[in-house]
Structures are given as structure tokens and as C-alpha cells.
Length: 115
Length: 111
Image (cartoon, rainbow over all chains, first blue to last red; front, top):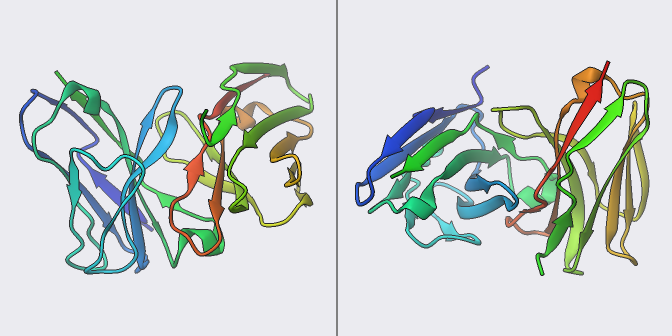
């Protein structure tokens, strides 16, 4: 059972470059999320999607964009990377609204370093 | 002030000890409270979920919520080296998708 697959696992990127982090789920969950995890700050929501075709902004959306063309895929794009976007990025999914079950299913994370 | 405050530790205990992990929060809209466990270089996984004040027990783990004090706790009895991980508290309002996490407490259980 794959669950959530993220790619790449790790990436070093020059500032100003465009980068897309990929996320695919095979659980047919309606909702998907992108979080970033930074030491001392925990996980912070970047963007979410309640269902295919819809997206919403989380706590820290600036500098990021997402799309949800279908149920399974939820890519995160950094249009012009900056060093402050160095972080570990986690994609997650839930069957319905996260508040209804409390359970988010997370991928293994993508470590991004922007130099 | 952060919405969710959690002591980052690190916390080191001997095998068999009782561990107490805690979080405080400021947003009274939070209705659901979770504890996630995260092993090194892995994604978090749900450990406990509760939606009311009081205690919820699952094996060696007990989650406690005190909404009047805006305080939640996770107790681990008879701790094992396999419990060594980072524990994240999380909370969310009803009918909402914006789950808020604490910074996480890193726990090491020594054999």
C-alpha cells in the first residue's frame, strides 16, 4: 500500500529557480494538504484542497501555488525560490475535512534547500 | 504568542518510565485534539484523537484534554525504546481543514 508518494525526496535549488514538488495519493481521499516543517515552528499549512478542482490558502501561502486537476495529484510550485523556503515539505490527505476525523495521512517528506 | 505552545524538549527517560507531554493553546475554537508521532526522517502518524474534555486511553497511551484551562497532555506508561520519536500535538476547529500543530517534543527512551 503506497498511500502518499512525494517526489523528489531531497533537492538543492538555486535561489530564483522554479521548483515543483509532486504529491500523489492512491487512497481516493477528497482532501489534500501541503505543510512545511521548520525547527521550533512545527508544521504549518501552506495550501489545501477540499476536493478536485478547488484549492485554498493556509497559514503560510505566500510564494507557493498549488493545483488540483484530479483526485490523486496535488503539486506544490515555488515560482521563484528564496532561501527562507528551505524546509521539509509534507504532503498529506484525509478522507473528508481534517476536523471530522482528526487524521491526516502524511507522505515521507521532501527536503528542499534553497541556496 | 503562538496559537499552540509545546515544549520542544529534548526529553530523555529510562525504559519503563512514565512520560508526560503537554501543550497549551489560546484559540477557544479548537474542538478536536490530536497527538501525532514522528520518527526521524518520516512523516507524522496519528497516535490519539479526542474531541472532548477528559481522558482517552489506548494501550500504554492516555490523552487528556482540559478545555477550561486550554491544556492537553499525552501520558506514556512503561515507555519503550521504540517510543523514541518526536511527538506533535495538533488541534482543529469543528468542520475545518486548518489543523494547527505544536512545535513537537523530541523524546528518547534509553534501554
